Each structure stands twice: as structure tokens, then as C-alpha cells.
Image (tube, rainbow, N blue to C red; front, side, top):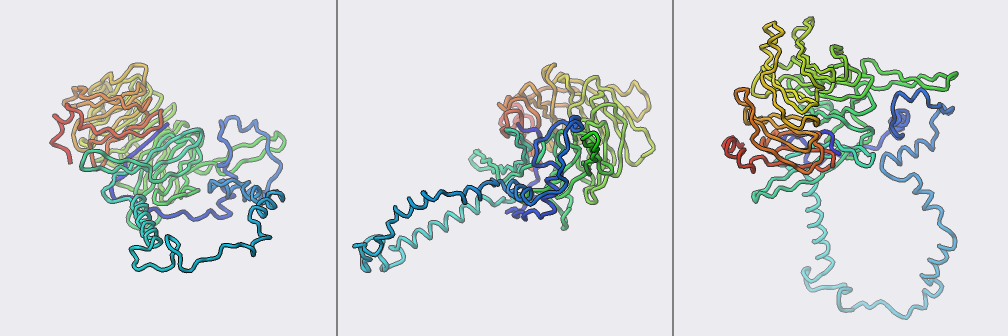
Length: 493
């Protein structure tokens, strides 16, 4: 299944990603101690697990870790060294080395055909032809692995057969209207991914970077991976997480000790601040909202204004100090970093929050999608007036089936008031929100299964990426719908 996806702006990726350096002995030890090579389980059962008596990591453990890190079998060397003697004897018999000198056939110096040593011209030399063909093939292979500035790129967080990974898709547009989409490279990640946030903070120097933050199930760690590096084994930054296991020998159990500022449960929502590019917000099942400085790897702010799991967070496009958070406690809360002593504003939405989105065309408006299939819009100026009666939504729409949550929403960056909604009912819909009187203008069933994540493209705003339970990425060109083309065709960039 695809649990989260997002577009990367054109030209952000390196044309050819760098190859990862092999992990050091210290990094391998860190991987083993973190449990990256063991099946993940419920943290609540960890106290009941028996602790192994071995306290040091053996050289065998290191060898196994290296083999697993590069996808090789740790038993390959044993297999190659265990060839039976009779197999060797059989091979020697087949070569008939005892009668080697009695061969009748000699080497013809001036033979005809493909074996000739001399050819009147290079065009007649089959070996030179083969070399030229191989060179052409190599050029084609390089061309296939090169990301062009005109290519659109989508990152998907997937889980398949209990293996989690990030896939980097290249989406090539063509003049004949038949786009080509393929996986350029992928990164194996240790835990089941729940949310992602792309960021261009230059964590490794320079003006910009190309990174993705990942929040995962059953781990409090936020991992940040470099998308310009292939076959990476470790994230370049880890925010929070388990520092060490405190061993209780008498009870033969272990207790988790978290790093300073860390979440203590699964990370459900992430949001990168595009103005303050080193800032990342997170929401967790531990009921907390945190603000991180990814450059230093530290938590700067922790907020505890929700009473249940925090499912979504979102920064305002026009006031980058303003943060929204939505929770399973059926509320949405606004906090303004410019007024840290202010308690913020709270809206009751009468159902568990699934997703949040600020209107990119208005500083004051946001929408929230809910578990009961509805989508509600709010104007924060009403809350600022100070009257509780003004906290009512600007509009409410029963966007999808009542018993199927609206798992994801996405505003169109080019066309004001155009909103996409994706649902567990396996459909994606487009809505015109003009004048706070929403109307559905298109509906699409992409055969993605239950829809978990949707996103309009940054560069081609009418392309909508869709991911769901079937695990296949779909891209819907919404302008192919007659209603959308009639209403918004003139806004195509």
C-alpha cells in the first residue's frame, strides 16, 4: 500500500544521485542496537521480553549486519566454500585436461568468417560493431537513469510484504499525451511509514538540499533521508527516538529511555515550514505537537493542547509562524508563534480529524477532512473576534460515504477554490468552493483501492497523484475531465 506521497519541484533532484558510502563499524553497531534488523513489534510488550545475556556485539553480528545492509545473504560465502570434492572432479573430467596436448584441431591464422583477425575496413569488423552497439546501450542506460530538469518527480512511502521503502518516481510528460512513469530508485526504511514531508533545507551545505522526513508506526523517531543518495543504509538525521534500553536484571526486562525532546509514540503527521526552512512540525499518538530544528536535530517547542492522538499539522502559507493541528479528540487548534503566551484558538469539528490544509490563495481560510466523510471550511478571522458562536464552519459538505473517512485533501495551487478529496470509499473528487458554496465538479475512481494520500503537482497543477491500499501510484490529469477543462482550462500553466 501507498501511505503517503508528495511531489518534488522540478530541478530539485541531482540528475544522477550519488552512490552511498558503505556504513562504518559504528553505524552498523548503531543499526543492530536500534533493532533495525529485527521485526518491529508493539512497544507495550517490550517489558515482557527476556533480555539476552550477551552485552557485546560479536564480529559475526557485524558481518551479518553488513550483508543485510547491502541486501546480500550472509550465507553466500559459506555456500561458495562448501563445494563438494566430487563436483570438482566432475568438472575436471568434463574439461579432459589429461588429453589437452593431443587436440587435433589447430588454430587457423587466415580463416574466414567472424573469427578473422584482419578486416579491410572497420565497418566489416564485427567486434568493432559490437563495441559500438554496447556503447550505444550504455548511453541509453545513462539516459534512463538521468533525471532531467523537465521531469516531474513523486516520492511515495510504501509497504509491501512487510517491507517498507521510499520510491522515487519519475513522471515524463510527452507531446503525444502519453506520459511515461517509472521508479528511478528506492530507499529501504526500517519501519511502516505513516507520513512524509519533503524539504529543501541544506542539511549538507550549499543553498538547497533534497530531503524527506518520515514519521512511522510504533516508533517515535522521525527519520530524514537524502533523496540525492542511492542505496543509503542510514538516514542522515534522526529526530528523537530511543536513546538506550535500561536493563532491569531482576525482572529480566528492558525499559525504553527516550532522547531529550523525543515523541514517545508513533508520528502521525509532519509539516515542513517553507519560510523557515530548518523548521519541521510533527504530531504524534503521544498527544503532543512538536516543533523541530532539523539543522541541529533538536526539539524547540512541545505543545500539549490535545487530549488524544494528533493526526495532522499544517503551517500557514502567508504567516509561517501560525500552525494548525488536528486530533482524534475532534478538535482543530491554531497556535501563533508570534504570541507564545496566547492559548490559541480551538474549533470543535464533531469527528476525528484525518487531514488539514490551508488555502494557498487565502491567509485566513483552512479546511479539515474528517472520519465521518465530511469536509469543513473555517475562516480564522471569526475566531479572532472572540465569540464562541463564531467558531462555526463556513461550510460543511458530505464529501464521501459517511462511514468512510476523507483521508486526504489537496488544494490546487493554480486555480483558487479548487479542492481535491480522497477517501476510504475508493474515490477522488474535485470541489469548487467558491463563495463558501461547495459543488462537486468531478469524481474519479482510480482503482487504487482505499485512497490514503493525494496531492496536486507543484509544477503542473492539474496533475493529481493518488496512492492507496493497492500499492500502485496513479496520476490523474484532471483537465481530461470535461467539467474541469471547461472551468479551469485557461489556468493551465
